[in-house]
Amino acid sequence: MKVAVIGASGRGGSRIVAELAHRGHQVTAIARHPEKVEAGPRITVRRGDLNEVGFPGLIAGHDAVVSAVRFADSDPDVLIDAVRKSGVERYAVMGGAGSLEVAPGVRLLDTPQFPDAAKAEAMAGVVFLDKLKAAKDLDWVFLSPAALIAFGERTGQFRLGKDQFMTDASGKSTISFEDYAVAMVDELEQHKHSRERFAVAY
Image 1 (cartoon, rainbow, N blue to C red):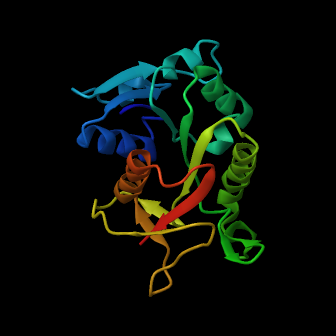
Image 2 (cartoon, rainbow, N blue to C red):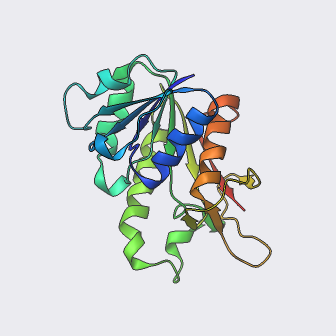
Image 3 (tube, rainbow, N blue to C red):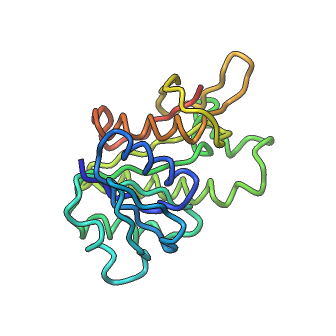
């Protein structure tokens, strides 16, 4: 596939770029600071800013677009509209864990232990997901990670879920950026989820 990754210099975006290239896909890595992204035989680096008029042209012609940008730092309407204008139908979004349910109707971000410092980003993610659900013309997917996502190992061993918050046997909810990227690229290749959110955790 030919895949454009928006936010390619970030922690999640960089691992998704690496996983795509590792599997032989052609990647257009888009970042506001392209000097932070390493090009390679399968990785073409492009500078791009969502607020620039020509941004949809950067992602046009790809089989899929992945966005791995912070929700609080971007306008969901601008980003979704850019994908729409590009003509690319398959749109995968690196989501957050805050909107996952710990009980029916109770989100993780609504619990007392959810950190205040993360609430703005989590709420912005909720807004983004709601806007995706209204985008009937896009074949989108929103992949939520575990509560704690950090650099680690690429094991390829994890669990997938839907809207429910997942923990392991010890009560922890974790995933590495490397395995998150595996789950994202698996989805791009296998196309098992369409117009829905799913989740990944150990």
